[in-house]
Image (cartoon, rainbow, N blue to C red; front, side):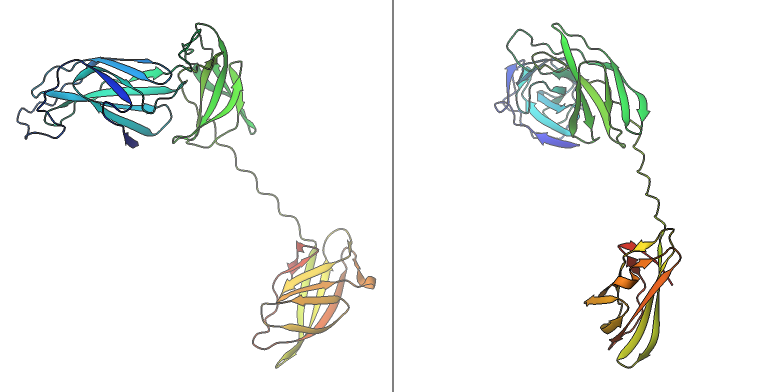
Amino acid sequence: MIVALAATIGVGLTATAGAAVDPAATDAPSATPTDGFPPNPPTNLTATATSGSVTLTWTAAVFAGAPIVGYDIQYLQAFNDVIWDTTVGNVTTTTITANIQRATQYRFTVRTKDSFGRFSPSTTSVLVVTPFTDAGPDTTPPSAPANLAVGSVTPAGAVLTWSPSSDDVGVTGYNVYQFDGLFVSTLVSTVTGTTATVPLVASPGSYYVRARDAVGNLSAVSNTVSTPSPSPSPSPSPQPKTCRVTYTLQSQWPGGFVATVTIGNVGTSAINGWTLAFTFPGDQKISNFWNASVSQSGAAVTARNLGWNATIPAGGNVSFGFQGTWTAAIASPTAFSVNGAACLVG
């Protein structure tokens, strides 16, 4: 969880005094506490919102053994991992504007700070949704959709269903969001009814829904649901090989060699026109050849049929040969392809 420190009173918020602040009190502990009593939390926390601010009000904490010097406020946006933190003096209301956006859901908690620098437990959180606009005729968000659930599931996706929301003017539709499980929400569908078909997502991904009205107000979020993880795509079945290549070293001597290559058709239909490719694992160089047109680039060799041996019938074969030179190594090639398809070897 990431904690962002907001400014104290005067930057992003205003405050209204509840009780006078002790001028001698500071944020740093003034002495080692001896009373053994941490401060009590405030009570009765409430929140009201405009499109760009949230005003919090609470009942001051009951004195517990050390003077109260202020309150610490923490808040976060729904489906966002950043917690904002700000402090105020010994007041009972404050208006926060930093990081507040319109049509957005937030949760707030408040805790007490005493003169020893100790904090109370936090209050129960309050939820607030800022309106899209502060001008009429509609500044009230719809109610949150309820009972979001996953209905039928196919490999292509899942059907989400939920109970309808209500609004003082009228609900015009619903926004469906995909949450990545961390802090990114993506709008994936806008519908007017209470069902939507969405892609399957792997854990920790999930979905939630917000209702919308005609002016752009959005409701609080629904519950979240997870879909089954998408099935992995099946691996394509390997294609049966239709050729077999035999490389035979006919003879060799220091600095030279002669080789024969036989291409066999092990498929069920004729090969009409062939191009054989392979790579020498050593430093062989072809100097002349027969029964094929042969070229070499580096260690890569390409051999093509001549006019009279272009067709290899099913079960048949053709052969060609070449003479070459070598210096350090004369190992035989181990992989061949005909017309781009890999062949059996040997």
